[in-house]
Length: 538
Image (cartoon, rainbow, N blue to C red; front, side):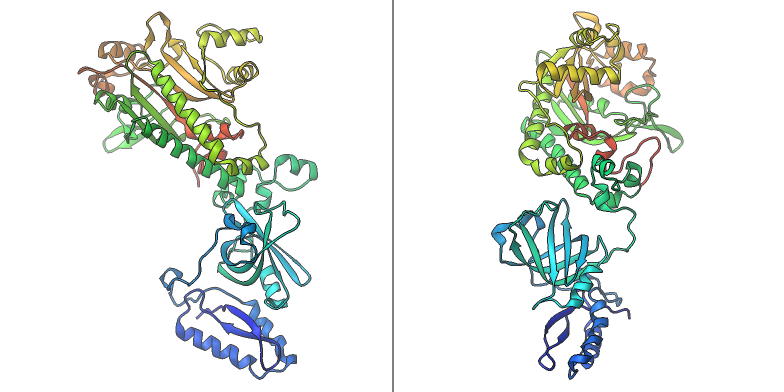
């Protein structure tokens, strides 16, 4: 039986030294506890002060588990309440608390050991010092606990005179009286978390280590523990929640659409083909067709959140082969701008919610990746495509009236809009018909243009949308024009033969929204387990 022990310390009545006691903190069986306690008792009682050095061996193997098959989850709950690190504030000064956290760093100095305990994006300094409640051996033990180990500590919350700038909890520290290792990490970590959160500029200027993106992604479980990653994905969760709450309050219905389909959603070659029993199928490039079918089925206003697949061999900072789509579709009464207004208001509500409720996360990310605060207008700025082309031409760009925007021109336009209108979020309306998908409604006043639009954040596209063709005959003509096999989209076209309301919508990339709102520079930072042409793991 592989035993390790938990120790408490108190004055020994016999010699004034240290008395080791056994406490079952991890579900050790009673028989194992009895054997261990007898062994420790026999080595201590009646000893002289000179013999107390024999206790070092016992102290150095403190805390953990018994290999008798008893799992911690099957033992009775301890009579204690764990306090969140985030809740450690000056109003708890003088209180004795229990905290569970990871060892972020440790530093021994003489008769004391400083620890930084981390819990998600929050951390606090802790101190183990030789005194009435801690021995020299306990200090040495605490210093030897490996980084990233999970520990339970009983400690007194002490306010500090000088702020602890390196921790999120700057006004307090913990004075530890007991410490238990709940799960011990291996000594060698694939990357150091303090290196992974160090700003690149600081690393370059001071010659300190930083961690490159591929190393972070190869060891994603460790990288996701960093305060920056914790903040990014908690804010991203907020984007989804705000998206859902806003649309549900507007009367939308959330739907789920198939991801294995019989024909390419968008047409073209950027589609993954999969084997489907005795035939082939495709991974959905968009829930577009099914959103529209739901509108035809009188759901009126729908949205969905789910994976989208694009077989684009693009290794840029903003492209993924799988991303999370936030998709919207709604019927309108008189003009497709009703839909634009609904979508832009949804985005504004998301921006407001992030600004008002996620400042901790925004500031945490900003420490490693500084950026200007995201700006937006109410109502949202809307420009026509021809206006954008004119602005670019005035800035020296040569491009045709019906030419699609290149990535550099999108970014330049974003800078021009920011300079002129002081906003990071805007809509570009009336795109050339030639650069839009087959189901896009042509502009009735100018057949070279369409009732379609894109939305931009910091000069990069985050949504592409349009009024959809809702007439089966026109839809058939447009599909043939794009070279799409009508047999493969027969069910889609047929859904418009029995009366379909005019409607429009769009698809938003969740990872891009998160990236651009925070001012980050690579979408892989905002994809929890990114997929691109070169990455299929972890």
